[in-house]
Length: 201
Image (cartoon, rainbow, N blue to C red; front, top):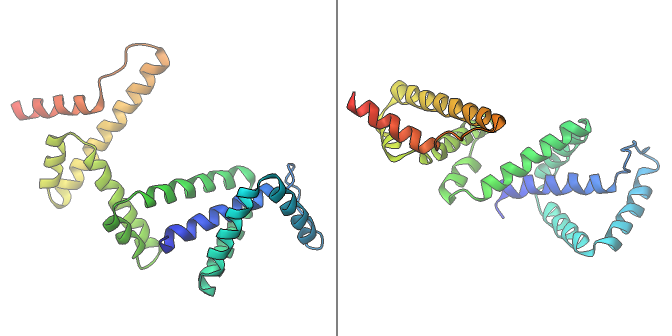
């Protein structure tokens, strides 16, 4: 598995495993008692779910195969996640899971583009670029071509315009669903209709 996705997946597995070992009331264990209590909890979990235990051993091997500096990065990330309250921790874990799943499904070129980022700021910029490209690919052909042919500020203005229209349609859709009335037209059909109207004008 590629490093970045494996790195994040191992973090997820590590934190999920830890959550299985915690008491339901999420009480803090003392440093003295924690290793023994965790060992007993792990043995109990292994008896209840041998397949889970095998996956954990596999992931542990993968973790130990990483360079020391990358292992330390994982430990620091795990520590930061564990320091959050339960609600925030759960939200962050779901975000990590969604990101890993999204990254794994990307075409190789896009995945490589993201993984080769020089730092976290550059990675975030590249992720936004890929997400924007994916969004454009979902648009009707005429709109898609209009955006692709535009350059610079004109392109960004078009993207902003169509994103705002999409947001408005989504809000109208949500409002219609809450009222139980007729559903608004499909987003693609509305964009097609709008494009035809623009061409006539």
